[in-house]
Length: 225
Image (tube, rainbow, N blue to C red; front, top):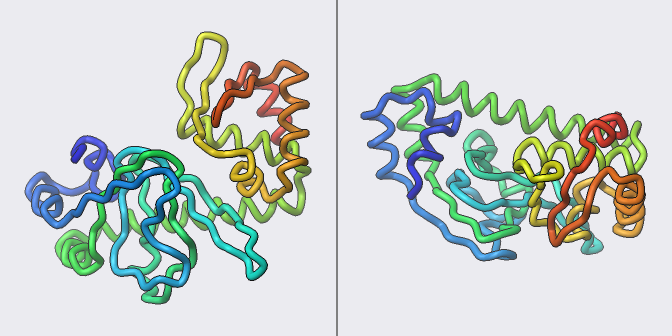
């Protein structure tokens, strides 16, 4: 288990070494291949998860079978924490979009830590607040932004979290299919592909397999507004 990634996670960063060491013993590792789910919408939840490596998508399915992609998370981020505060069925399905390793922590173990380390609950609330803020921004974008603007904003968000320098720009290995990227911005695959093609034609980015290279990040940023 990569303890360095866990130690940097906001939930663990405030713990002293003894508490952190004790908590590590309560974790269970979960390895997922692409397309495998750690839990499904409607399941009962009894633990939260930390992403050690790889990426997880959180999605919901409509009654007619369409999928809405809520978020894409990467190393150091947590998910499944809502069930700690609200013991109701899971509200989303968590699926690996690449080879992924998780560390699961049962709610009972986390509650024991919170009892002696109240600052952990503050970190959890901050994580929930960030998730809520992101959801509110996504709802506002659906109302006020056109599809190209939402695509540009999604690419910037993915670049901030997963991007790394490339010789001619920023490589964003998002690991998403074209359909998943369309679900993330709440539009049809055809409309998103048209927006991406426009960005390519303008010289703002280059498409690669489940990745993009942002060649002109300033233009993408301007288009996202």
